[in-house]
Length: 255
Image 1 (cartoon, rainbow, N blue to C red):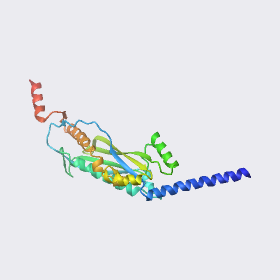
Image 2 (image 1 turned 120 degrees about the vertical axis):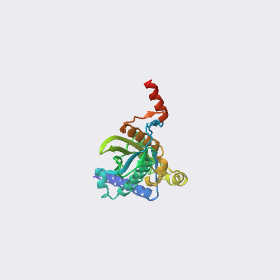
Image 3 (image 1 turned 180 degrees about the horizontal axis):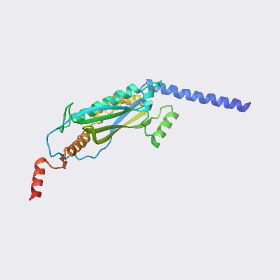
Image 4 (image 1 turned 180 degrees about the vertical axis):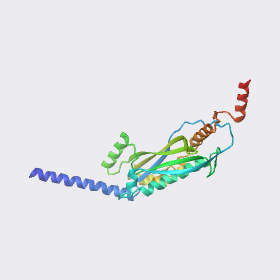
């Protein structure tokens, strides 16, 4: 009987702790105890690549959204984040479209034979997290201290840009950016003193200025498209050479 009473007491205490943690987390959500930081991935590209033709290539641009199975079910949960996810990916897709449209090597035409397709994946919250040992430790310490110590999670977001010519895929490139979510009561003063003044930080992912946070992706996208379209037109890119230098080089070879 004594053992049974002790086990019941332990269960009650355990339930109280769980309820307390849930209450603290609920209050944290309502009190904006979260903040998110966005940063673009690093890419190596040759910015000196030039095409032997200076004529811009006519292209059309389309955006495709792929839904994961978990995203399709997420609207049924009480923590529905599907609308927030769609808003985020729509913002990123429109930004990438503006990067492509600003390329001096392209001219936008709806009837072009070449299509550039932007593909974004709509996912459920946390589906793209990649837990590291450090992040797991911070989450554990944050829970044990009832969110006094900050915990964080990391996520990798992907942007796919495919190039099609007459419905034939000729190239595909993936670009990534990273979102780090922090959670703690300390985020309240942090958001007021720091986050509000930094464009690559936000209380939620949708509060971030991605035009600033992902600006390093624009030259990489331009360089990759220039290289792809030069190859497709049968005019291979000439790294570091201007059109005049390329002609002089060919003339010296013929001699």
